[in-house]
Amino acid sequence: MRVLDWAALSTEQRDQLLERGIRAIFDPALRESVAAIVEDVRENGDAAVCRALAEFDGCRVEPGGLRASEEEFERARGQVAPEVQEAIAAGIANVRAFNEQLVGEREWRAEIAPGLMVGEKMTPVASAGLFVPSGKGSFPSVLVQLGTPAVVAGVPELAVVVPPVPGGQGEIDPAVLCVASELGIASVFRVNGPAGIAALAFGTESIPKVRKVLGPGSPPVQAAQIACQQYGCHTQMLLGPSESLILADDSADPRLLAADLLNEAEHGPDSSSVLVTDSAALVEAVQPELATQLAELPEPRRSYAQAALGENGGAVLTSSLEEAIEVSNLYAPEHMQVVARDEEAVLAGIDHAGEVLLGQSTPVSLANYVLGVPAALPTGAFARVTGGVTAETFMKKTSIARADERALDSLSDAVLALAEHEGFPAHAAAIRARRPGR
Image 1 (cartoon, rainbow, N blue to C red):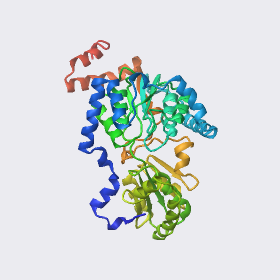
Image 2 (image 1 turned 60 degrees about the vertical axis):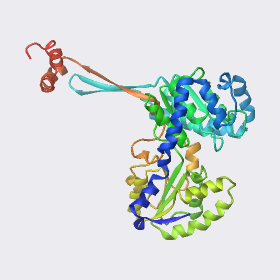
Image 3 (image 1 turned 90 degrees about the vertical axis):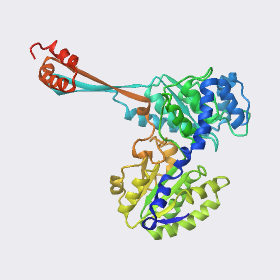
Image 4 (image 1 turned 180 degrees about the horizontal axis):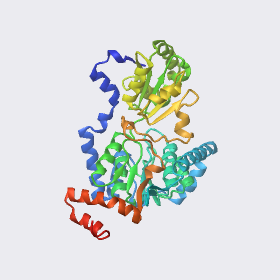
């Protein structure tokens, strides 16, 4: 694991650490190539989706075979180990419980002045498309994290797109089909990543057009979501390569710390894993633990982790715990774990993080799978402006108001003054029609 002294880093070096590969998503060459795929799907529908599957995934699928069949759903149950199915059910149950708590009250009203009632009602979006990655492994947990909130929100039309199993003949990961079945989602399609995003955005002969598309993925998948925004498709920014930051003081257990650093580091070569601490002794103690545990990882996970803890991340030494908090807020990580003597005090200083897990009994893997808190979280420092995927992500708010005669009387003069100031005579006339002589 590389070690960086925050005070000694130049502005350019700090920026490089904080950006952690986000430039790849906005690389002009990548965006141009992805835009071509998106445009092909927009113009040619299923034919373009099948063309992308053949070119990028190496499997030939006819348009009629894009959608997962009932037989595939039935076979999936027998292909997934019972303990995995039980884990899926446990994850869904906790994610459901979290989101039901979140949106328990879908309408509120209050009288904020005599005769003036205001409020809001929350309703689901009409349709949504969910992207589940497949390139580096099997990720049923992603559909748990995306699909469960959408179901709790009550989205009437849900479609899932997932790249086929690498090296196969177009098969969809059976574990993903098990999750879809558990959630009651019947529309699952085998697609190439960027082409699938475009198919959801525009609709094809087989794949429905939806109002909102979201899901984590590689830079090409994220670039496709950005490209589709210009056509009016709403996407969630930004669910890119996995990243984690652990803020720790010298009370942390080095062995557990090493395990937690590797937790997110193994995701891929574009992942990042960062330790921020004011203790040089802790960094020194973690290094041999990392070496031992890293050696036990199989390839390609070992190489992924080395990149995430090397050029993409590493340990950042700060002069104090307060500076460690400042660095963490600048980084605005997807996943954050706090290991300190006073974790609540540290939490009070954290303003920008997708999630904050307190203590070494709360590893990221626990949150990724079964805790129930959102695990589809903003990456690339977008935690500064948005949060994780919840039922609220799939809902919108409509404001409600009612004014009675008392409220109309008390507010009319203010409306007339502003209408005259802004030059809107019809606005004023609407009041005078109700209150002649004003």
